[in-house]
Length: 354
Image (cartoon, rainbow, N blue to C red):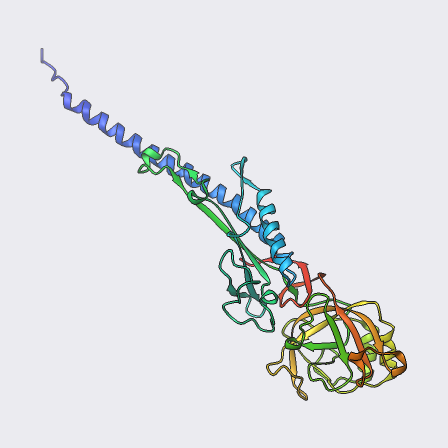
């Protein structure tokens, strides 16, 4: 009877080694899948928080320091209303995780962003902003960042880390940019008067004076390219519409419009609040038949219209009658499209751009 060969002891060791290697590879692959899936899920939650915080913060931009402070606080509040992994609240630093930028509606891109933690109240923008007479006017966008990171003390755990090189934690981060600031169009409620950007420095609650003379920094307009006539102004006042938007060029008349009918119509508007277009001029003047692009809108409240000395005009109107006196309205809002220079009228229609 033949004798069967006995199994070699070394084969048992090889099989055990192969099993261990395959098991380690499988556990490593499982770790990669689990950690990648967890990271993707957390990044989605972080992005939702960043989007909500940026949109809410952008609604606070009003061209004033108060809007900057409010934007920071709102960004932190909206972030904290979100969480990751059900229980991990999304927290940000309202100073170091929020920054302010300038968005160009012409190029649909970011012109500049200040460093995180720096306010436009204390530092000028790195690139000039068309039509902005102050840094606050140019800041029309908010960028918010967040994360689950080691530097924040809340990094993501790495599961099965012993099969992934011993790494025990990893970072996930997100950011979002939303545009607010001044509106690029105002559907209704305009006056047929436009100001040159460099001359519009009334600020919040400041005085507005329109004199019926060749001041070269303000003029009647029909928000179109044709000649500005008394008959056209009459029709405009009856409609009160504002069809023109950012970048479109308009004609201005800085000469005298003396029609008593026009000034009677303007006098009937005393006490009301109305939008006015702000245009850009490289020379800070209205010159002849030149066209001027609209770069934003402001809102004023008319406090007086004076046509003759018997109306007891204030000193600003003496010698230049007829004359309009008003004030720049603080924190006026509209639902016009976002992204233009802020001259006191700001939009509630914010939008994500990054």
